[in-house]
Image 1: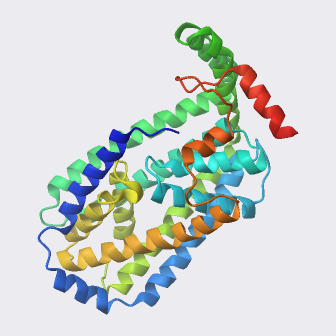
Image 2: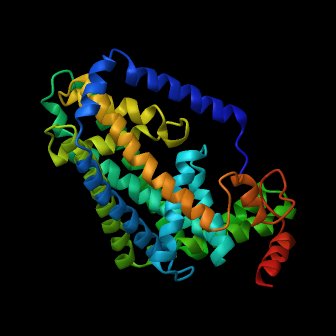
Image 3: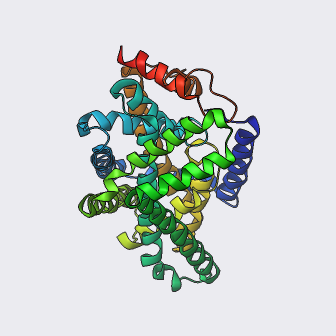
Length: 362
């Protein structure tokens, strides 16, 4: 995976702007005072809920991967943690690709298929996040000065919800009308892609559709939805722990709204880990809830550390245990487990796939 340099610098610039928004007009002596008074035992309790949610992500991924290959959740848990680490350290959310590459390298799960399962994960995450926002938005309606924010957040959440639901419907259509989808993509590929790449691209599409197989079962789809709701409830448990540590008094519904809005803002491209976007959104929402700016920033800093450091360290440990180095280049790692000589379009030739698959089986 090659990331253009200007993409990286754009993310850095966006992060700088949002960091300025987060740290401006704040008395830092008061911020340090709030941080010094924090009861970190509550943060540790919140992390228990958070890591339970991480374990649930492994269970959810197991459900989605079952049609491709049955893997124990204990095997998937380290890969999920490595994905978090990748998202927090590498640009462009490279952790998602890293997960697929690791499954290919260690468990021979097709990259296109596993990427499809990750896309489905993100769709359900987005639907649940938008639900958190829309269902709890009335928490802001009584807040002074929040009227403009409520309208903007509601509009953004509704538009986002429509987009993600349409994508989910498209994926369901690809699953239930497999033959029609295959014919349509074959026709498009035949008219838009050079002939020497057509067979390979059609095969990649077929593997991607195969990765959506779990959606064929209403029961499995319901499981994924319920897991998603539980995951985000557990993550909000960390928000609750930090709230108690800072001596704040917000309802759990308010914290769910806070979690949802922050993750909506994280869709804005920025430096790894949502640097700046996370901080500005969290502080601004807490101020809207009536929290003093200094206390809101203190909360934000503790939450950032709690969300970033433990899972990143754990993912790095698992990454080394998998036989890789922290200096490993994600792009070269992907190329190692995909065919050599990939053309500029990023589509490998058919004989290269067969050759690589043969090498992997030997």
